Image (cartoon, rainbow, N blue to C red; front, side, top):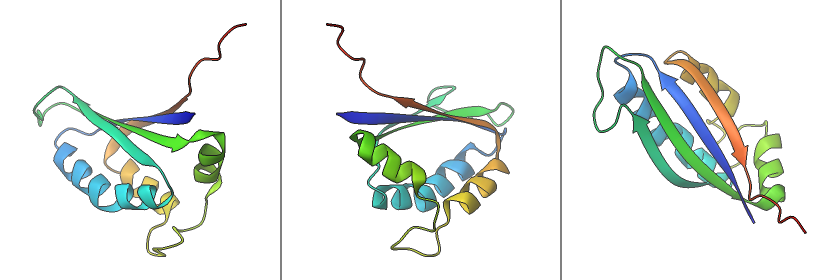
Length: 113
């Protein structure tokens, strides 16, 4: 069973391109080393950035079951293979470019017997 993690990040007007680049270059490789798999990315407004408006970015990740979720969640240290990446520092930097962020964890619904 895969557990899905949906990140919804509202980026300040005019910073969507800068944020996407930083996320791709810094966050994604470190997340993948923590066994997170990027399933898809979306944005609103669709297709283009409008510099006068915030842009909402969506990143859908997955991990292998509850064990993968807890392993990813409880990891507080800098990434084991790249001591330069610190998740807490990343999110603090990220917050300078955003209006809000929300993480939702999802799993398949249990079958009612």
